[in-house]
Structures are given as structure tokens and as C-alpha cells.
Length: 106
Image (cartoon, rainbow, N blue to C red; front, side, top):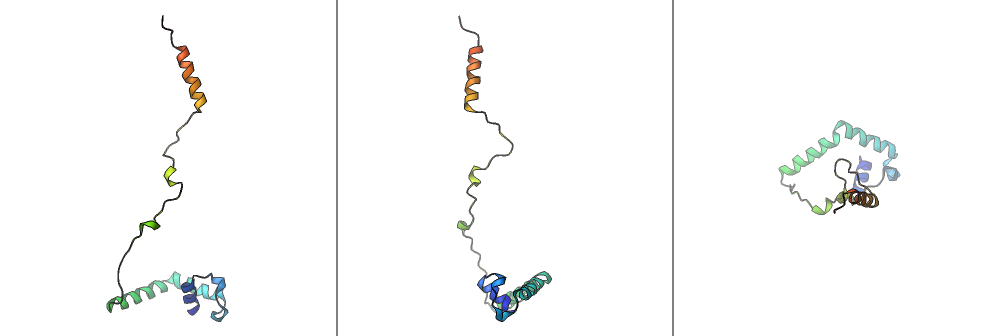
């Protein structure tokens, strides 16, 4: 269990686990097995209940809006549906054709 705690505390990769904790594969398999069977969730709940009972837990929630950033392209996202655009030269030629096809004023 010490190897699992070391890895969680440091944030290192499993492969970087010091040899004193044994093979990293064995430590990882234990961690994954405890995650699957709910051991970690039960441990966390036990610690929270115990510490909350003695007033050692401060239940404060803080939201920092700087972490809620949109992707750089989010502002220019396309609207639903496909909008067909024509080339400005084509629009200009169509406009000229409409004017020339109009009956001439006497």
C-alpha cells in the first residue's frame, strides 16, 4: 500500500515507482483491484466520516472561473446547418446580369 500512496502523493508514473515498493506492475494491479471492488471509496468515506465527527473537516466549496475556459475556436463555431456561400465574383456577375436583363427605360 505504501507504493500506491507514494505514487498518488508524487503524481509520478507507475513505471517510476522506487524499487523498495516492489515491482510497479504488482503495485498497480493491487491499486486497480481495490478501485474495482470499491476499497478506495470505502476508505475515503470512512476517513471523511471519522474526521467530520470530530470537526476536522471543513466543507468549503470554491469555484474559480479562470479554470472554465473555452477552446480557442469555440467563439467561431459554425451554426447548425450548412450555409452555402458564393464567391464575391460570382455574386457580382449575377448582379450585373440582372441589371442588363432589365427592360431599358425610354
